[in-house]
Image 1 (tube, rainbow, N blue to C red):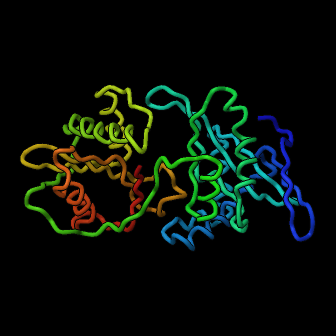
Image 2: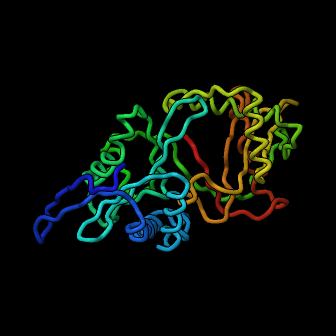
Amino acid sequence: MSGRSCAALRRLSGAGWLVFRVSRLDDSTVESAGALVAREQVAARRVCPQLPASFASAEVSATSLQRLRDGGHSGVVAVEDGRVRAVMTGIERVSRAGSRYVELPAAGFAIDPDLEDPTRLLAVVYGEFADAIVADGVLRHYLGHVALPALSEAVTNVGFGRSSIFAVRPAVPGTESSDVQVRIAGLDDLDAIARLSLVELRHRSTSPIFSVGDSRSHEQRGAEHRALVDRGAQHLIATLDGQDVGLLTIELSSPAPRLCPDGEPYIGPTATLPAARRRSCAGQCGTALGAPTRPPMGFCGLRSG
């Protein structure tokens, strides 16, 4: 992207025609953009109080935007009469299958929550951001956003489908089953963890998710989960009739910090072998997650297709 003002969108208001100017997110606009993210977070927390309060701080949101910029993200802002009305950031990445895609994180995306219908503004901001990326052949774009009704509708109107959602659930003890046993996995379980994680990956590549297939080897998947363990994650394995049939991964942080509760664990890769479904394997892992013998937990971020 160039640093020039690259687009304008006019809208009719009670006071006459006003102009949105779309330009690059830079040092002169990052604080105002952070204030917008914080304002949107306040509105979103009225709908979902479990969303983190930290992003309702303009300082925290601006720092997060700057961290994205320092990490290689580029971005645009839409400014009306000196006020930032929209911000979008993104970065190109390479999937596990080797294909290129663009990640547009929720921490770097916000639109004025006071707009009744942000569709047109979103279309222009996204168009300006994505124009050069599409021309370069990167056609998969993943946009994260808070679940405000008008914003969700605008994202759909622009043409985005749903790839995944982040949800929250209380970690509380449930009813234990005598048939399903759950253990905290050790490093000698990495082979089983890699095998069970493939169940979820294959499921995600089917309808209605249609994720890009996973081409990593069994050893590479094991190494990835070993890296999660090194970062403090725990794996719970469900055993039924002497066979490892279920997996639940507990990570210490979320890949989308703006969408998951502050300071709570994140439920990562989960899976149950098809033959063991409807036999409470996932439920027993959830029960173990909230068992009194484990550290106290509130809500957990859960990403699902």
